[in-house]
Length: 384
Ligand SMILES: Cc1cc2nc3c(=O)[nH]c(=O)nc-3n(C[C@H](O)[C@H](O)[C@H](O)COP(=O)(O)OP(=O)(O)OC[C@H]3O[C@@H](n4cnc5c(N)ncnc54)[C@H](O)[C@@H]3O)c2cc1C
Image (tube, rainbow, N blue to C red; front, side, top):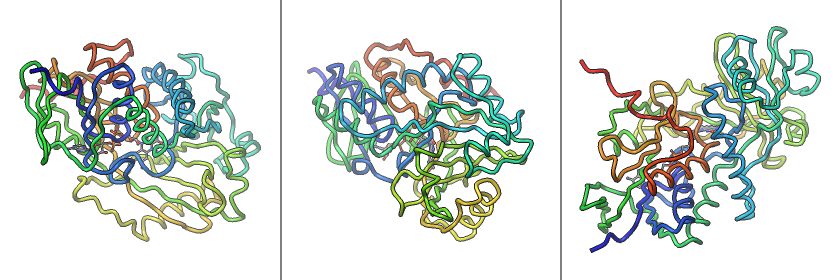
């Protein structure tokens, strides 16, 4: 008996929804299984905005993937009519030797990406809401901006459905096992068979990928929305870039223009600095001392921003020890299982290209995209 599906995708958040789209666009018979409803706010892909940029301070090896992701943002917008990316420009600010500045410059130089270096006076002149110290500089990238996670996930789900994928929500995978030449996947209601399994578990990776050998740390993160003093006008995306700002204590904060109209203010968050949690134990309440700490921090660098606190929301990072992703055939099941996890708080901008890579890996066993940095073997525990 042949298996029911060519590929089962587990987890239809950012990465899984993109995988379901790319797989089904190539004619594969796809089943997607998701624990919650479509486009939910219990994982890592919600909150209205995510930064995207190409001068990537984390490592120049990400740049070719970003170039491809940008092409795919346009494809998704064309195919669905949804607004998924706004390229309002971005400034990476800090001392010249900070990772945020020096790492961005390294990628820009290595890949010949258009950019400008601004000193503190020029930052203040071009972007009057920003108040850098005299010893801070910025790399300005015109093509930086933001992507909209809910719209992107909804678009990929829409495309996958249109291409014939079966997407089952509120139906978590409970377990799976190798079966004949492929896999058998169990949920509370059903058992399915497929030639290939693609697991995109987000913050559930420690539970679903116990045999991967990667020590994940799940981190609670908070996003804050403030109504700026004097109103949102200077913060609108026509006037305002995204920013990532590393201070002298190496705290990184990042923020967005006001993208959702005058009442909803502008969003800001700390990059990293989160509390360790699990999807079951995460404290979803944002406490007054946290909001105060963010307002204090922002009053020093974007003084008009913390006018009135509007709201806050929690989200989870899934960190690997070196904060690089894991995208690979599963080392223990290389014939039939592909994994995408450990996106370490910077994965969303890659969502469409990760979908393409996962389709390559599941359907052909390999990919033309450079994913050597994401090999899980690099993180395997050293022999005792
Ligand atoms: C506050 C915050 C800010 C961020 N900012 C940025 C940014 O500016 N730029 C950027 O590029 N990235 C950013 N990121 C990171 C980015 O959002 C994540 O890397 C990305 O969303 C991860 O996608 P995912 O598919 O791995 O996880 P998710 O989207 O969470 O998807 C995992 C899915 O698996 C499902 N699932 C789990 N277990 C099962 C099961 N047993 N059966 C079926 N389904 C299951 C879950 O319900 C979930 O839907 C940020 C993240 C957070 C939290």
